[in-house]
Image (cartoon, rainbow, N blue to C red; front, side, top):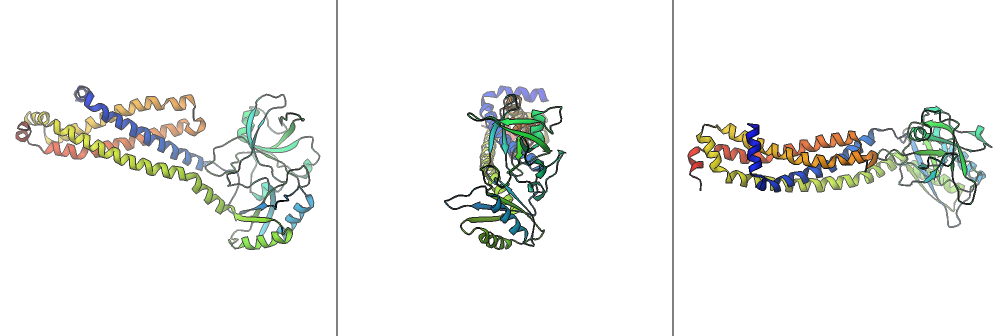
Length: 398
């Protein structure tokens, strides 16, 4: 039976060509959306490496005169904020988590080899406790690193495995090359499992957290990170702004719970997926109408053939199954061609980890299921209409 249906499909290959192309394009479209969504789901399952539930961020927006890395000023900010009963911990960083800000540069090992682009965020000693971070190796930097011959840094496991495979990363050195100056040297003191500054939908990258010390170096910290007591209300923002104005009235401050920042950036990151999904749904509806129309036309043109089968003893169920099975086989052929093309993407690694084999396999299975369901639904009415024909009606059809 299957061999016979394949012969029928092949004999009508000219008529089926456009239908197959339509199914192929629909499969590619569904695959793209499925892969996009599945990658988001995969990223969401990974740890971000820091907490956000009881954390707040205060962005410092200095006046036109700017700010400097003044140790006394930062010490005053820290002591003043810790006086608030809601605040449990205070830290400083170059920027906050759950923002679109990224800072990266090219680093190498001490001999100049293994050049990598690494994301970074300079943080103070209290940052790790404030953000509820955990180590997998080594320690967090602290005052015992004062006067160190290299900048103490905590890196993520991805970077440790890349630069120091099969070795203990603790104590290892790397550097930031400079054109006309001596390179800046870094010494690894700790390793964390993961750190994704932009949250759940950020791709895992090589990440480093170098030590920032108030009063040391020229670069100031423009972000204050707080850990507050659970249940602190949103109106605490007004209290924070009032306290910061007491410290430095010329500056502007923007205080926000990280929970709100997280919701905002996640909506922004998922917006392209939502838009593409709406467009894909509209296009699939168009494909469904086109598929339904072509199947109806094909069934109408085959009424004499169907009548002959009925006259030879085929029942209505056999006709129904024939129409549906032919459509499933036609869809399978179109998807097989599309799969031969799409499998090149993970093989060549053109999209990197964004289209790994787990995402690819799941997206193919989901897309195939959608196309098979669409094909089956579109063949139901034409098949039912063909099955209802009596042999007499079909054989007298002109």
